[in-house]
Length: 277
Ligand code: SAM
Image 1 (cartoon, rainbow, N blue to C red):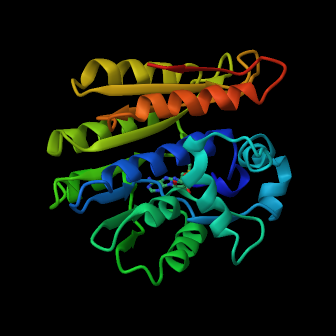
Image 2: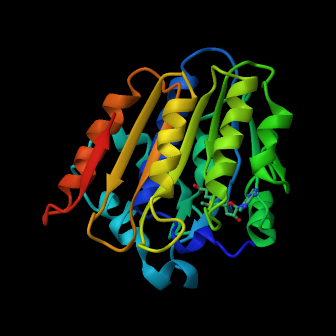
């Protein structure tokens, strides 16, 4: 089942915090004069058009990246992220990049990207976006299985983003399995797992993310950073999102804390909250 299309959600509040984290992690990894790999197990299309029919349906970006772009007082922690969003608009005025594009802009000539995407239309677009980038390899393969085959990465330095659509309940277990596959083969990599916070009583997905987070915390002994952005805890459906980060770079915690504090301050009704642990 491949009905999820990220184009409906591009640039929303969850994308902002996820893409900011990817940018900051790449920045940390690029400080050392040694190459690293970026593996995106569910890469999406690589670039989106916020003026498309998909994006205009719910205009999720208005509460996400647009709110930041319109604020001249946006804190320094967002500087590279926003610079890249603006740069992506050189060709398409309402463009918004996907995770692999953000990573690629922060990476050097000697670094390498492995990008997995199964949806035929998004995979085709991803191929086009990275057509001229010799550092990137686009795979039309199941991203849940990739860490088993490509890890450990030869440079022994890597950032992994596991960002699936969670269309089916069993995907929560597939995420845990992928993480085990990756960490089992390469324990010092930086791993980012994105998850939605869903409140839908009676649905099998209700509280599945909370269960996943608990399992991640107990199963892996590596240092972990857990962040959540809650847009409105009384909202039915997706009310927020979170990231579980394994082996977070030094200083990331403080950076995400200040970013989330600022995002919550943009909402004057006071229903937004965050946690960083
Ligand atoms: N990481 C992207 C970003 O932040 O720009 C968004 C990815 S989106 C949440 C999830 C993507 O995973 C969708 O484009 C979907 O087509 C793709 N997908 C679903 N199942 C997959 C699988 N088993 N392997 C690889 N890609 C898959």
